[in-house]
Image (cartoon, rainbow, N blue to C red; front, side):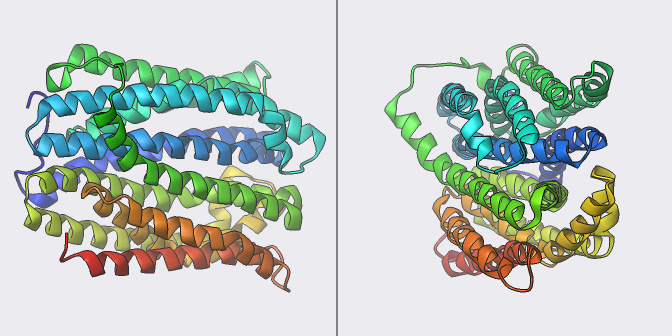
Length: 441
């Protein structure tokens, strides 16, 4: 068990806290990459923010696809550790990294070649579209670093070493913060400079992961990063990770359609409101994702070890924490949404629109956090399909609901209500679904 934290022993709350806090920090760091870009680009004006905001949804989709390997690593490696089978842990680690790199190359090439028609979907002004295409094509060069880092993060989380991704991503964020103003304003590269800063930071993160596993802590006694894919491990990874990747990718695609709807009813201000508001909403999303990931890793080890009482204790603890933080986010968004939005885009028309979005979206925060936290419980037991069904089902309802509501006197606020109402429905359904199958698990 060299270099691994055994989550099947010790106080539940202490183990969860030590596991969850670095994961929470890592989630916020990853969110801060985009927020940092948007904050600096916001000084260029709302048109530039609209350009990177449009691409932000595609990057969200990219990160969603990388969840196939991250979630699969957390569950497969975690359950292998819980079952004291380090040979499988090594093989699952190698397979996750290999699949991650292959997917990154295919997806990156596809977006690079199809950048123009993809960005053209938003029907933005010609100068905004051109700026967005350049930004996207630069970012695709860094996709291998994103996917490999996601796999490394999943492997470390499964091993109970969530502090490692936190430290490494913290270094990457620090570099991004320093390079953004230099490239955007110092060199005069604008949004292209923001993309270059992000790539260099992501490459640094990936390099540090490689150094960590090869030199500082040879997990499981060491394993090859890349291997010839075999059916047994590949099928298990795809079965575990594909539902998570699909539900998050579809969610990103739905937001692409929502962006088109917001642009149709509110112009570039509507699109800026949706994309920037979504980044602020990530305060709640990333907090709940941190709880969810910690719960998934904790449950995976204990589920394989047959320690159901520890799973039950972890479930109650994380659900209470998610509910508490959801209430805090609701109060923050409802009463201080405009002030938060103005920190990213100081343009008056934009932050007044953003205040309305965050107020409406804020009503759903507690239930949204419960839904995402419940995903971790399902994932840890190897049941990755129920969260996918819930998320995909209600997300598919979101677009037609937005169009119907926006065509009434609500106008653009109808789009915001569609987002809020479907988030509430997902949270309620996730909680009830688990309660129905709890005894079986």
